[in-house]
Length: 374
Image (cartoon, rainbow, N blue to C red):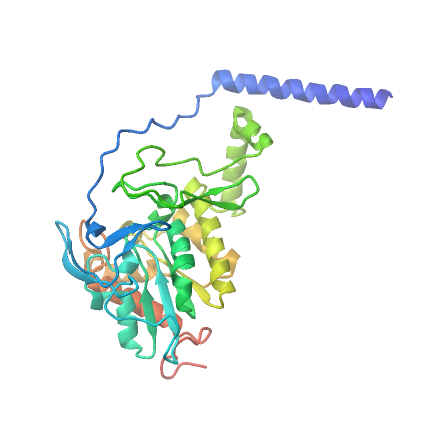
């Protein structure tokens, strides 16, 4: 009986100490900054408006069989889409006719080839260098990683690819945190439930310019106890230091941002669905211009490489190739100055790196270079 009494006294004492510590933190610690109130919406004009239409699942998608001119202060380029809305004029049957491998490339404006001609995109260059190969360019400017998952579900898987190049540009994670764009286009997004499951939101997608509030919704649901702990300043203080320690000793991903938390869950789901359909996913890391100028392993890059290792998915990290190429000439040879999409030379470099991966002995998607070991 005495032991039970002592146990409860100890429990109460710990509770009192924790409450006192919480009180001290609330008095002494600086309050966490509150998110700024949403400003009145002023829509931004986007150049791709000329060739995309509203889509009730994806938000927007290229018009089929479209010829348009991409006009910006820095770019003046004619672009084409095929009957499926893919970049370029070549059409593809849903079921393969050729005996060669079929590759589906999904991503954003880098995949699409924003700023270069159809023939200059890395997808088209891969086809030209390997006539038996089909490379379907399903890149869409402005897409987040959430829309890439939905595009694969709605359109990409119908074409039965052998390989899916999941082209990941860092900003695609941030785009997955918003419900509509600065250009007025609403989009699907995912919430993460308290059980860690993805929950699709905003579908059917509202029409353009219909949404004016809630651009960045709360993406994370919490259990009762998670919600209680989230309000505790003592808990947040301890948690921040444990996370910092875990990150420094490589126990967790370096990138702790909300956009990476939701992105890695979406990417995991996309990889599962690609594999379930019998295709092989390949992550292609597309470096922004500032990564190429300072190629040290920053947090997003380190997190992506760690993710790829954990998911056992091959990755083509283009950062080093672009860094080495930029050292020999200039970064502006590979990125459009003040726009920072790839130039034709940048697409050629990306195509060469991806081709080298596809021809590697471990992959066998393309015949290896002459003289290479089988």
